[in-house]
Length: 434
Ligand code: GLY
Image 1 (cartoon, protein in one colour):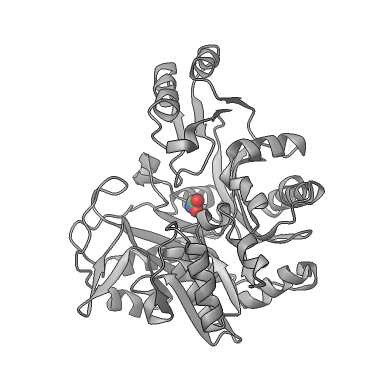
Image 2: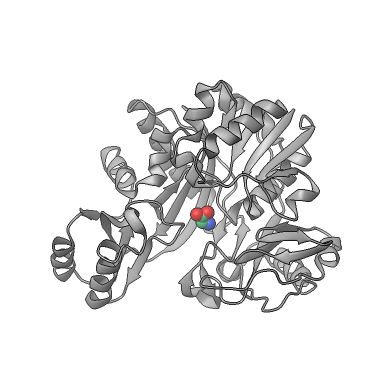
């Protein structure tokens, strides 16, 4: 079987790595890939978002007789690549455009949750600046202000005062810092709690959660500073007990897939629920219509079952018939970033020590923003590599991951030192498996 992965980050390297161990996969292609992916897949340079990129991808699939396409990032899904491929009779794993709206429009997602009684923070929708400001003035901070459309993960601003809120509304709706995505906004009731990511497989009627994980979105230790694409993750998230997972299944996952089906939207693919746990109750902050990044770098290394087995079951509507197996060990991933990220940063800096890092036991180095030139591996993005390690506990996975991070170097290398801190605090208090 030949498989194409669309995307070029750490998530896509992880997908290619997992496919490279799949008994049925004989060849992997990646558009456009990175230096790490190029070691296990044939990388093809087609720019996502350029005119006719769907057509170019379909031509590649037809020419190379590729059997299956997996989509990493949200943009092709929101733009309808699944619908396009399906019309041509090409096999692709990812939701159709009408389902991907759950990520593409936060207003659609919130109204959908309201219609189906899926727990989410209270909210109001605005398409007028003054009305949004008047509403804000009638409420107590903090506020959560969200652009409606896709904004590369940056479309949510948390404001501690009314003044900050007014500034955020103006920046989004008048200055258009997120472009057309900010034509409408949502103001969500702020909720204090612990965030957790639940990725799940869906076949249109059945939805099966993967192991839990937790992202670290802020750039600095202690969750300080601006949001990034994600600076590290670990799995499992100890905040998710068996009881809570049962509630998530019954109150969120099943009603979401059934609610979509009732509305004529058959969701086949990976659905990511970004949750906040408030006094033991799970609330949905957002949905994503794809694998998370960096969550994938800790979740897929724990998956023992072949990806193609699960995907085939999703296509056939037979997820409920298969038994998905997971590694009991914990995983933890630390993202190594370029100085300046998430703002401006340099590219083209040589990366040293990747092989030494990879050689350590129970460690995998997933490339994100890397490129190969003249036999050297250079930085090519803000998030450069993610180092994932396994451990019998999160504490052990953390020790191994950081040992491996210490082998890697490039000018301006930056990474958080505290990945996993919430889990370790919680387990410390509970006296549980650290
Ligand atoms: N880790 C956040 C995301 O994938 O959107």
